[in-house]
Image 1 (cartoon, helix red, strand yellow):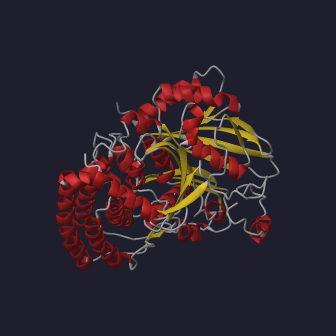
Image 2 (image 1 turned 90 degrees about the horizontal axis):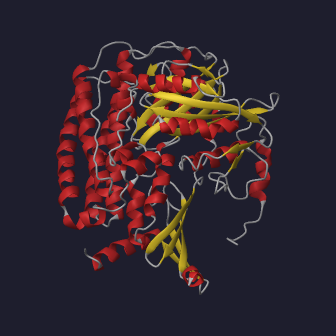
Image 3 (image 1 turned 90 degrees about the vertical axis):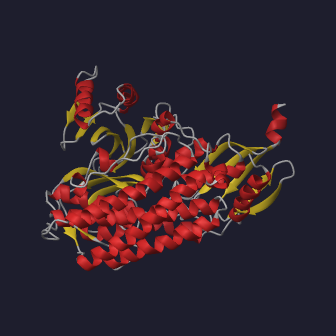
Length: 167
Length: 398
């Protein structure tokens, strides 16, 4: 069954406008629907809602740092069907955010969550393999490169260390 | 009983060193005898922090940066980025420029698919096919050089247009090259669907069902070989694909053979599109004016790279540098399918399963086989593993 772009957008709009927990939706571009979640707790039920309607596959998870002064990051989950892109988005604290992992619903979320976790310092509750995906194993702790106030100076120590000869 | 089984289990780390394919990745493969029971991936050996780097360069400089994310599909990265930035700026690119972008994108797809055909054949021990397809790849690289001046990193895009144009002489050269490539592609299609020795390595191997491909979020030729109709050029036509519609290529079987057939048939489709473009290239300007600062806003730009959907999220804060550029490449979506597919297969099938997704990792010059009982690591090279695969099938004709 092929779902058209218009059908996907109207189904998603209907789905989230009648959502039990009130949400705000926006259409920033003709092919996009942005859904602003109240909190990360709504993420799994809403994703299940999308899956039940067979709306899209998880194309990516984008992390945004809203800046040190706001003390917040934003997570965007993009689901694509034909040309339609439904984005579930919510804000989390910049420091020590814990967000439920989507892996139980969508296994491919693992790689995106591991990336967001090492780049923004977000913990995904339920993520089976929280290891680094891209960054080196000896990357300094609590250093998240895609945060706006990341200081590359800390990396100088990374390469000064003695090699451990594979131990 | 359980502990004995534990003892007999080997963990085989593969990689990350050396480009036997194209980029480094590290796999830890757990085997029970010959059978793979688990596979874990570790990426990042070629992670250069490009997303972060875009935040400290202006909109124009970033074209050249994103072009260098991938050597083989450099043009499509720049196209995704330019389409997104142009949409944010509200700029309409002239039709001739849009069409030339598609022309180069399809030439790039030909380059990428021929290169993949060679690599995949090599992993199966079919080096004759590897040599021939890489010889033919020279033809398309020459065409690209003719059009853009470069064999890789074509650097065709500008914000607001393209910096190349083609005349009748170049069109004729391209037509000539395509005639040769089309003949070769038909021959390869015959080889991969009829050569019994080769089919032994591809038919029924690494089967990904339609629902698996859907749930795992596979994209590009890997998805289409499992009959999942996912092609951004068809689903959400961008640029000149509205004027030059693409016929989607789908195969049902989902095994390695299907992945060969999908890519080869896509080559034929690319030849058709390029010929149509050469016949009906609209006249007109090549560029339009772009503002230096881009209006505040967010946009998502999706394009079909040779390996599948390429996804860009671009956020502007109204200055001359982007607030955030998020890039999701197709390989990361398909990587998970490798891990899933490998489980239950013979170790000897691993090189082909990896090559089957056309991973833009590369890899794996050193394989260490660690025997947990003896604690004595035996080092294999990727070459050894590949050879092992070939010899295994020489001795186990099915």
